[in-house]
Length: 268
Image (cartoon, rainbow, N blue to C red; front, side, top):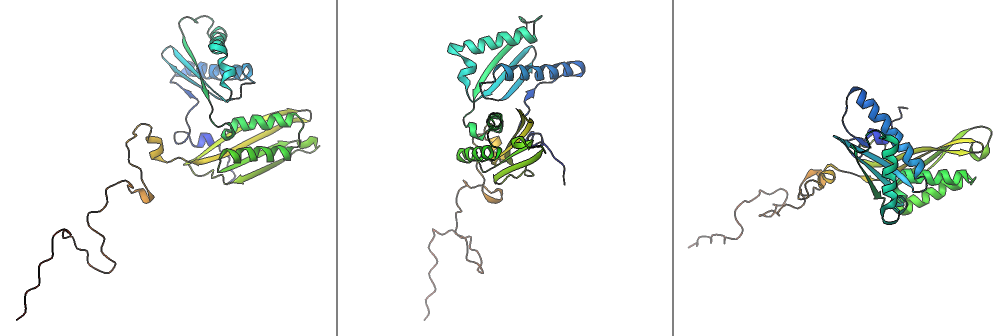
């Protein structure tokens, strides 16, 4: 159809969630939104070597929690937690100078288990290689191989701009596997950024397909005793049938199988 939709926005509430979680009205909404954007920009610049994937912000009645997802959490936390404490002081001083004592701010650091399946980190790797003047085709192939080894079901990497210093800008991409963009159950991670090269900016986009997420998989974390379901939505762990199924073409008998059959009458 030609209509491009961000894969994460398209799946909000199904396989993805909001990076900022709070409620506000009118002027407070605009102020909180600007502050969230400023906090993310500040943290990405201050922790540019810590491989930051995403930053989540939660607010609730004077309390604020900032969660940093990083592939190198040791650089964020520091020795004996000094880095996290210093980061908290910087945030309070920069964004809450007048009411630093009244705001309860918590800085949490979460480690990313498989960095090769995180689209934001793959984009950062592609940008670093392009800024080192590596050939873009080699960069695309290397990044796809890393994602394949990580266990993804599909990946697509696209770059656009003055590739290899060419005078005419163009768009090139490589893909492997499948990327079901129209399937809401598909867990597709997406990220986009730009590499600043001598020839100009080169845009980079990455799609990673990590499998399907079904409704019972999302509910299992709240209801761990929910029975699993097989094909057609039928329960796969229910008790077996008490009576055997009758062969095709014959009437089913519902008489209990443990009783002996009556003897035939004697013929004189």
